[in-house]
Image (cartoon, rainbow, N blue to C red; front, side, top):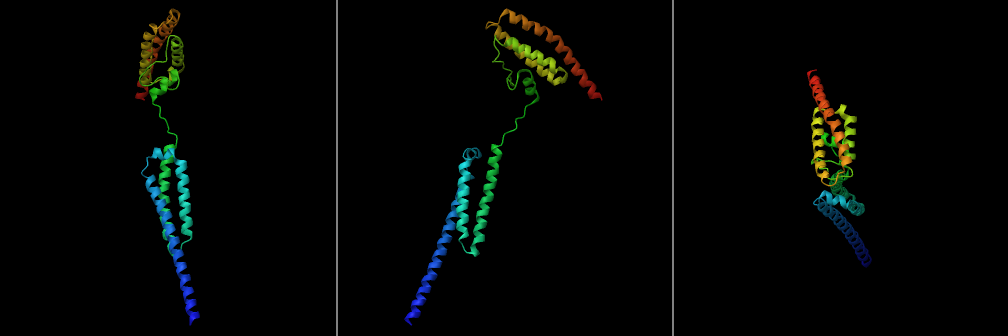
Length: 224
């Protein structure tokens, strides 16, 4: 009788140990998944730009927490594994959405250059002159070179200009002339001033004829 009681007690003790172990494993899995859940909740409240700046650490932390959750789930009974795996999969789906947003934010933005800016770039190089038409970088030492570059670029590209392009060229030319008035007071040499006058003398009639020609050409094209 005593032997049976002893065996029964040992069996009960073993069952309690197994149940206790399973409960501990379930608790551990719940804690790991809850930690992963809290982490994704916090990430979704962070601005995309801030996440982008710290993405390497965020990605590493998320991968570690996911791995710990999956390892804890692997120790559960089959009857609860699927349910907990589905919880982790749901969290991972939210992470993928967040990751996609960050990667899109990190991707190089395509810069769209409007027609007028492209025209200004043709004359003076990329982004030397913007919408404000400021020639602040032009001084008494480089203004002759600037006029010459403008005139050479004009001659090389005038056949490609539309009527709207000619309107923009006129504004650019007038803005450069305005800058020249300032530079003259800053010590522009007489020699450079005369050479600039020669460029202007050649440019003015050429521009007038070309602009009329562009207008006539577009009118003819519109009739066809």
